[in-house]
Amino acid sequence: MYLKNLSVINYKNIGQVDLHLSHKFNCFIGKNGMGKTNILDTIYYLSFCKSYFSSSDKQNVMHDESFFMLQGTYQIGESQEVLSCGYKIGQKKKFKREDREYQKLSEHIGLFPLVLISPSDQNLIQGGSEARRKFMDGVISQYNKGFLHDLIAYNRTLLQRNQLLKQFASQRFFDEETLLVYDQQLIHYGGKIYTARANFIETFLPIFKKHYHFICNGQEQVDLIYKSALHKSSYEVLLKESRQKDLAMGYTTTGPHKDDLELKLDDYLMKKIGSQGQNKSYLISLKFAQFDFMKHLNKSTPILVLDDIFDKLDAERVEQIIDLVSKDDFGQIFISDTNREHIDQIFKKKGADYKIFQLDKGDVSELDQQL
Ligand SMILES: Nc1ncnc2c1ncn2[C@@H]1O[C@H](COP(=O)(O)OP(=O)(O)OP(=O)(O)O)[C@@H](O)[C@H]1O
Image (cartoon, rainbow, N blue to C red; front, side, top):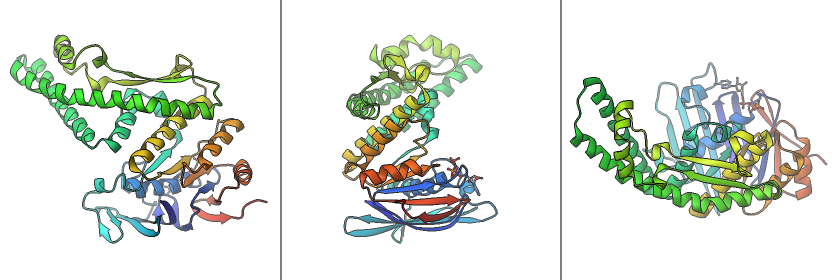
């Protein structure tokens, strides 16, 4: 599957654009703030029915305009499919596959798989544990349909249990029976979440290591360690042990909602010692492993979107990455960069099929390839 044509009207600073794309590499180059990320975001949007960067659709409409339109024509084997999304400020967005409008946008997720890597993903390494739980849960949800349901049920129960604990504290009473009902539900769903995450990391780790080794040319050792209080005791025991603490604090202090994924580089915490280039290589390897996972599960090669990933990487690592994604394991790739020189040279060397587009204040023009 690949995106053959892309049309955009009024999406952020992109006024009107119609692009015919390469089935392999498409590079968007231009100075800072010209709209490279915005174009990549429209491609993400067509796969996920939302922007990667802004949670409100109103923010995605070009200033002083009232709507945006996106349309993508995908080549899938011998046939073509058109996805389109229209949003008018103040109205519900309309997302269509061919001419059929989705009633539930969740039906669309996963059908046009895509993996995006952006500088904002650094949060996965530098941020708190929530970002890493989200990453694990996001990948698991793509292949384990029951997982999302368990996660939602767990979070809902957690919220209710926390409200109850707060009530106990503020109204100075204690109702063990109700607390135990919530405990039973947390134990049920929490146990499933824990098992799913543990199994996931076991399978994911060797794939991640393989990618990191390739990118850094085998010079550094990496590890991912799933941290959970449930390693030591059952959730039932943990909840009993922490009850007094929970009552004092007014919230649930232990459980899978506190899990983390420790990211290690040569036995040290990545967050503490990673250079900017190592951080980037780490992030790319995590996302490439996610790509492998999705490809295997969907039996369809995801589109890969690389937003500004080469900055801070040395020439050797850039070449290793391009080498890797040039292989047939990867399908269509979108890249943004401020500098065309190395991109042209590397693709020439690889003999890859590619197109280069120049972004200038939201206008896009296709450039001739350099000889
Ligand atoms: N709703 C909007 N309407 C008009 N312009 C917008 C809107 N939202 C964002 N912009 C503009 O989009 C530009 C940023 O575009 P983008 O993030 O795609 O840049 P970029 O080319 O990726 O830059 P960099 O190389 O710095 O990452 C900014 O100039 C910003 O003002």
